Image (tube, rainbow, N blue to C red; front, top):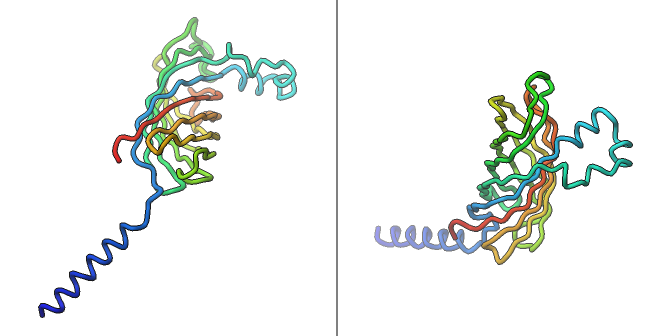
Length: 196
C-alpha cells in the first residue's frame, strides 16, 4: 500500500512539474491611462457629403476636429492571442442628437463612456510590436442622454520589457441606439502590470 501511495504521489508531483514547465504567453493584469480623441464631424460629413468630399476637403486629418479626453483602462489576457479590455473615459464634446434635433448643445458638455473590448492580436506578447483588431460594446451618457454603441477598430501594441505596454488605437464607433452618434475614436496609452 505504501508503494502505491508513493507512486501516486510521485506521479502527481511529476504532472505538476511538467504542467508548470510550459511558459504561458497570457498577458498579466494591466492598469493603464489613455489620452483620447473623438471626431464627430468627419463621420457626419461622410453621411451628408460623401467620401470624395471628405478626402478632397482634407479636414478629416485636422486636429481641430478631435475632442480630447482621458480614459482609465483595465486589460487582462484570456490566452496568448486574445485580451479583454475595459475602458472608462471622459471628454468634453458638442454634437447634435440625430433623433432629438431640439436637444442640441449650445456648448461642450462632459461625455462619459464605458466599453468592453476584445483585442485579437496577430502576434503574441513575445514580440515587441503586435498589431491587433478590436471589437466590443459600450455605453455613454451626454447631457443626461444615454446611448449604446459598438466600437470596432485596429491598433498596435508595443511590449516594453514585459512590464509596460504602449498602445496606439483607432476605432469607428457604430451607434446602436438613437442617442448615439457616429464617431471616430483615437487613443494613445500606456499600461503597467499589476501583478507578476
